Image (cartoon, rainbow, N blue to C red; front, side, top):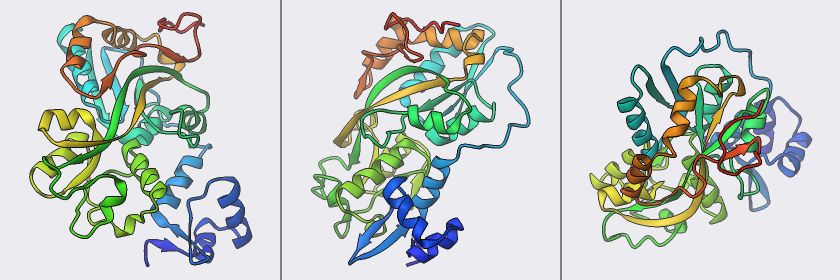
Length: 312
């Protein structure tokens, strides 16, 4: 199958010997499946693994200019983030916030290249407990400031009434079930891949796995329109579009900010938004959000939990 590589093929792909392939599987988490005693390697997961292992990124050709009123955010798509950006733009005078929907990994790359002030991310680490720290350490020369934006509930969106009787990720492989997926490099896509692996489901057996959309809302609209029966997205979309929802996990969604840009006026103005009553009211109108740690500095740790000031 074209999307699966043998040990010899993955060794050639990585320009290493076959013995080293087994070492990478055992010690470095190279994605692999053992089927009837034979190792097989999903090509798209090997490519993601290589990207995640990258540490020596080329130096950016240019850095962000001094802050001049335009705040650039890039990374993971989120409905509550859109509301925060709208609040900022309506009240910040000559300041303007813009967002590039690049996925969590794309946001880290943009931060590394100096193309944004804030990267947004929800990348689940190998320990399946924490988020973002390991990815930031690998992608960046030095750790950024990390501030929590929210916790949110991820899961599977389903057609209203769940006519296909889908109860878990394992049911997505049933004949007649079509899914809609998120793009490679998004935290939502990575979570789905983990859940499929945990359930023993091969992505090649899922109808629609390679049919991708760019946003959580896009997943819901594909289901509402009848183009898919299920897809990974946040609970907030289910509430807005009146869809059924199977929860998978609560996740942490963070801001990552280069330390040299942390005190830019636009960054500080944006961080203040998340403490305002109007922001919490907006969040209350969406389902599947938890703001109990919103605005907390996660790295570097501060003496006061609610303090978002970065000590020099």
